[in-house]
Length: 476
Image (tube, rainbow, N blue to C red; front, side, top):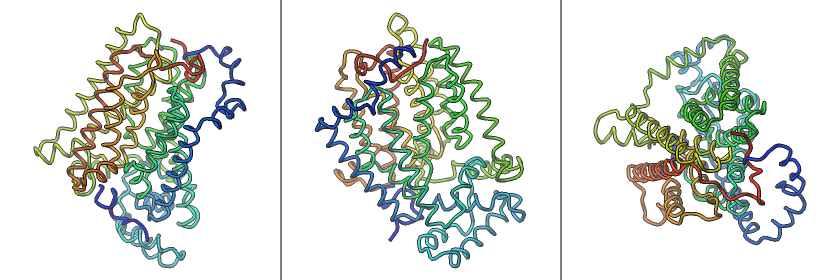
């Protein structure tokens, strides 16, 4: 009835605008205003895109209904036992085996759930690689039955992904039709989303929180909301550290663009958020010792030992299996260096041009940080590639003249198709996991090069929305 819980990748697949002037236009330009709703309702492209997006989301929900939730099960179990008197260290070898076996037995008696019994079998010994903050965040979703908690998690995750994707598109100035078409494509044909749904991981939620960070960050540079943006970004990184490269890329982007006030406020927020993220696990674990316990367990299981056949589809892993040389540090240095160099070139070339809206600048820098991680990490599961979507949305936006470079659009769409995998498998019968990993790696490289070129140009503005750039705030 459910997708194989042992398979992570599925069956063989593996403006700037002043605050007062903006407020004066909100009543007529708000996405939820009556006049705008009437215009959207009379646009056949928007209506058709809405139907397609809705159908895709229903299909995605049904996939989750048929999946056991391999990763969610482990989050759910560890969140329950963290801080229990008989589990002083949930990351320890003895506790992992004992708790795993305990919950296998409880799956037979606690509730009548075949889903839970199926997903418990592979976890006779737990592998809790997530941070203490992640397990703390899952505590509210671990107090009921597995069926009920898993259903709530799937609903929250899919809603966060859909809302986040549309919000990022709108922040970048995309029209409603394009935003909904991208959502429909992702929901229907994007294997990274399907992989995340099957295993019950948190990349959908990450995308939603990223959108919230970008919205807060797009406010005026002097706004206190910049502190909130920094704090939320820090919590996101502490929650799952694969987003750590975002921090230096965003900081350098603001510094080079002369947004020193914004940088200072976000730095305050980062410090507050990091401290909060470190202390919150006290509520669940009862001790800060959980952090060194987690780090010790993680370093004892290096990602370089997780082979491609298990679903580790990263470029670094592909190169390691081909050369027997760990090139992850070199890839990280090269990718980060290329991003920083392009930010510098963009600053120089854009000196005499109007500055980019904050939402465009921030999304481009954030997307670049995501791609640095995806191209250099020694462990990249397929569902991690949901983090490539912000880069594609940046590259698909219209320029200042209201047009798009045809070659850039074509290459971006081809890269999206490559990462999606479903169209490639359907059209060309590509089923071999190694070939799929090669295709996704090349597609990520293409997005990275295109994004670097876009940042190096530095001054390209998206077409104003309704004659203004109200969707992006901030002062240089």
